[in-house]
Image 1 (cartoon, rainbow, N blue to C red):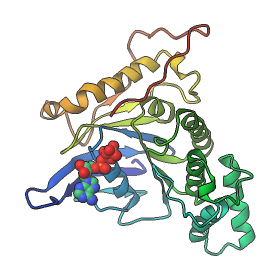
Image 2 (cartoon, rainbow, N blue to C red):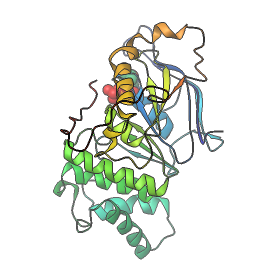
Image 3 (cartoon, rainbow, N blue to C red):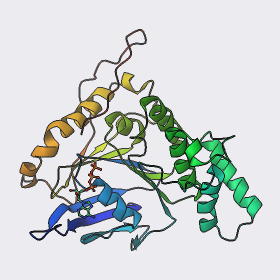
Length: 304
Ligand SMILES: Nc1ncnc2c1ncn2[C@@H]1O[C@H](COP(=O)(O)OP(=O)(O)OP(=O)(O)O)[C@@H](O)[C@H]1O
């Protein structure tokens, strides 16, 4: 049994001014194993943030449910930490203060020194040592996002939920934060769920990539298993023979299939409870790996 089970999830919003209500997604089924890193990819408006909010307990479903560790989610919990696209820090508190605020909620019995030492560990982990007393207004965008990551990790959540956490950052900062997240999640085996529009980010981070078709009535089209070996890095993953099959498969989905998938729904063999699992590159002729002397690849994000 998967640690997180999304079972027949549906979300319907009432119409803003009369008319019919809108079902954003319907009959969504997939699971996340303990220690797994799962990315969700789909076009704007298919309901990714809504799904993450339901998983965080910040929104209710209109049908189906989410079971975590055998219990249905009924509201927010410190077992599920969220890192938002925008940092959502308390502007009047320092780096240390923002993280300590969350830590004190999680561990109300801890004394000041223990809270401080615990916060410092996570400040050091995200390379913010020396910035403990700075306020959010004194930090760059990347530093603010680092505080958000440290705050989320410091409450030692069962599940880390991330809604496009790096999309507002420049490419260099995004890359270095992705590297840090790879290192942290690799070391801690943190169960993680991330929404991203960036195909390369998904290939770097995810064990599994869930593909959602366009809304309304979005569905899970397919679950892609990452066929690149663990320990991959941004610098070398494009040399692996499965990189291009993976990348092309995800790109093809976003460019064509996300929209045309509705026609496949009624095809025999599609079962929403068991979406097809694909392993791009496996069983295909090997794509040519890039040799060390060749020009570096241009790494692009998928467009919306
Ligand atoms: N509170 C709400 N009331 C009514 N409609 C909503 C509400 N929240 C979201 N929606 C609608 O639900 C749909 C899905 O929104 P959501 O933000 O989940 O999509 P998304 O896939 O995360 O998009 P993006 O990639 O642009 O962030 C959109 O059409 C949005 O307008």
